[in-house]
Image (cartoon, rainbow, N blue to C red; front, side, top):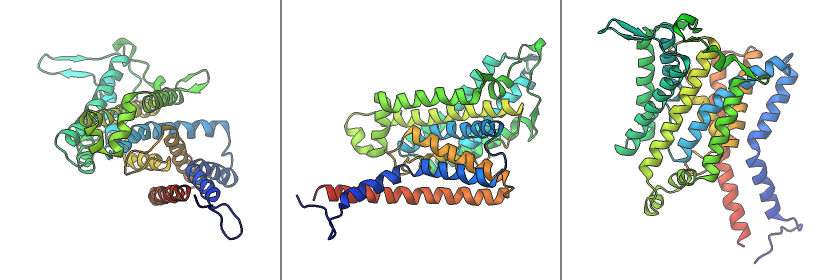
Length: 352
């Protein structure tokens, strides 16, 4: 084996290893840099109240991004997540304010909050299953399938109320449907419920990816679908699972947002698919599939959350925020490609 030293006796392999380490830590480094920047430029950025607000917003992006991570690892993409968030919020809001109207019987049924939550979660899973069915059974490209679902879900959200907002989602004691605001605004042990929800979901997602055959199969399908089929993995079922899981995350976020605002608007979640994709790619998940971690995605979501809230606090235009988000996505993809090149170079050096 040849010694990997340059003319000055410097170990090139160690340089490559250090560079790869920095590449892998790029999202965490970016988060620290953003926090330092905004703490200098924005007054009271580090206040407890502001930290809780940013954490709640970041947790919403993180939940969406966790679902997106499973989809992208499997080799797919989900453009419908923002619209499913909006539809989920509208369904929950409608059930609380208007109930389920059975006009043929002249009856209106009001459900308690637990049932409202179950119905909304079932809706999210169903929308995800629709995406998975298109992708796995009809071989529709994920981009096209989920783009179509984006419009379908947003259209149904608008139709649910004629484009109007369901406001004051507090319910009524006589109808037995109170308690909805606690989901998004309540606290347990002084910590916002949204954070607890993220912790629970993150732990479940990490367990699935690290400790179960299901998680390993998701990576295998994204890494090499043909090899996965040959090895006996039910590829179609895996694709159904990842999209259904993504739909479930959307429904949870829809519930959280509507609960926090005590209102549901059909435009809720608009363009959030960009934030979810950006957080996922920033966290190290490869758009080509087969590579990604839940921990990295959560850090990526906090980068997006801190960046969005920090820009708002600085008074940056919403239009510029969209430009910056787009640049973040492109930059993340570039760094992903650079990391792959660095890993290949390191592998070549180690074999010399």
